[in-house]
Image: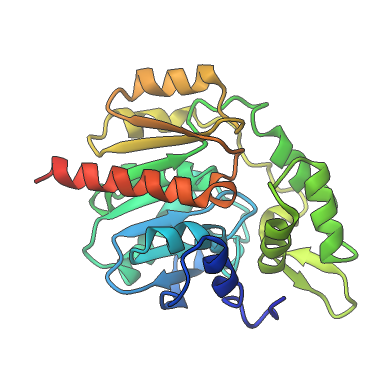
Length: 300
């Protein structure tokens, strides 16, 4: 297991598991200042044209295997309040607020370069908000297992997990609770994810890096009504790909609504749960790659 100071120690093993072998692409952590505080990102290669945004409670490392398979320069951003990015005093992690910080980060990391923005769950909603607020930054959208039409009860599994204990006796304790909640597809991947998404206190107790697990007293809960993001998709002309897990959060009715409201969207189902990028990174990378090529050809 890597130490907290060696966050890239898993990459060689992950590459081997994926059948990719060496060499491992160059990746570094880069911090930039935004109006929401420090924004921290993993920058893979140079001159990236793909930006990836993780879901609530996760961090940029959730995309490691997908990026390894894609084998393209990319930027994976820790959303505000997650990973190594700063926590907000106002606890405002709405998609629209996140999009402001993401836009400012991209101004610094990829100036003048429109991105294929890939977002899962909260990251997908943030990607939609970014396309509305900063259309010059978004060349195309890949939305993973989320929709503005998500019903309040559809994400209860993750909300219940995040509402649970804030301090744990060990990282293994978190893994066991996540498995019991039906989160994750394998113990090994969960152990890696927990290692990269937690900190060990001086007394040996373990806490999550993300702010959602430690809301300030009196903080308003995050909204579960995302219908206000529909116009951002419906009024935009950027290519859209919706990828949903076969047993993820999107019911057939929600997927059908997405297809009706956004008829230009391509829709792909992958045999996975909500965290498609962790359960089926190769299949997701293939879907993203095909979509990028088709959107590039459409603009020729």
